[in-house]
Image 1 (cartoon, rainbow, N blue to C red):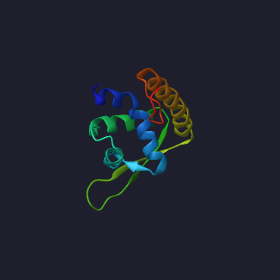
Image 2: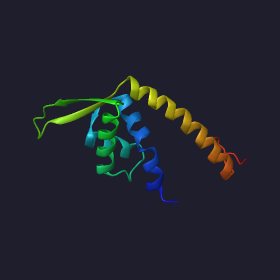
Image 3: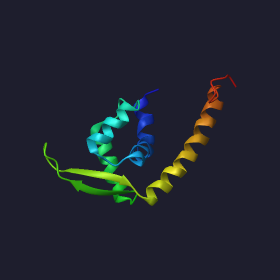
Length: 112
């Protein structure tokens, strides 16, 4: 199974989870996703996801001047984004349980 296909389906919720802890600019979000174990995440995919989530009303944004280059556009989660993230956490938990059952594994690592 190609993990990049799985990643496409969960990138929105992964980005929301990352900015829930702390606001971040595009490459910072990419770096934090990779540090969390999503090494295959593409820069363009994350930038597009940030723009889409912002347009959908799940994120706020603001610009911070940088002495080391161009200004950085930071994104933060808002109430709508938090509600979306909470719903997606529930959906993910149910989905993961179902897949574990189907594959003969459980979330505790025991065989079903």
